[in-house]
Image 1 (cartoon, protein in one colour):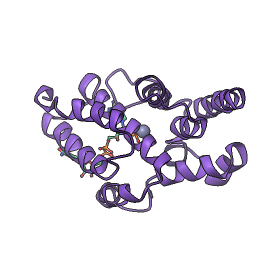
Image 2 (image 1 turned 180 degrees about the horizontal axis):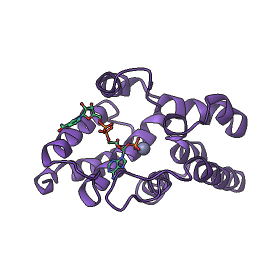
Image 3 (image 1 turned 30 degrees about the vertical axis):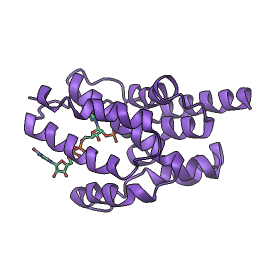
Image 4 (image 1 turned 60 degrees about the vertical axis):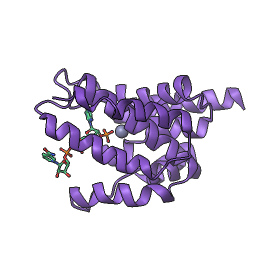
Length: 180
Ligand code: NDP
Ligand code: ZN
């Protein structure tokens, strides 16, 4: 199980790197996009003690459907229905207006699978850390605080999924005074 999990995880990393090639994060340095999916896996394994290959693969693939041409069917063919399903659970419906998408994340969070809740927790931990250390270019203090408030509402819906990661998230939330 270990070896197959590792093999599948490295395939997922390579797949995500190829799909996100050419994309950048929104920070001033325009960091390579793939740093973000890798950061989720790092948080899950090294801070959360999560070694479930299904969760780790879904974490590195979590933005492929939302932000690249990748289709759910393509993910299912390469990684199976379970991993594709978790990625779909954490994928926003881009047909909806932005505000509606933000509201949906809050209302749907309690109904996510336990695996998708772990991905969601890691995603929000990584984005709060990025906003503290390397925020999107041009964001005001008010905009950063609005993001922290929204992320807190999303994570309220997944509480109980992983108390350790929730504590990490709470530690970041407590740093809003640093936002300017
Ligand atoms: P988002 O709030 O969606 O941008 C944040 C997202 O960008 C993150 O969730 C993350 O998504 C990704 N991201 C990329 N780089 C970084 C980084 N360095 N740090 C953190 N996150 C990063 O911004 P949008 O421009 O899409 O705006 C959408 C919403 O913002 C609307 O609802 C709008 O109403 C609101 N808004 C609020 C303002 C305010 O002052 N309060 C002003 C203007 C708009 P991922 O993990 O998926 O990559
Ligand atoms: Zn993300």
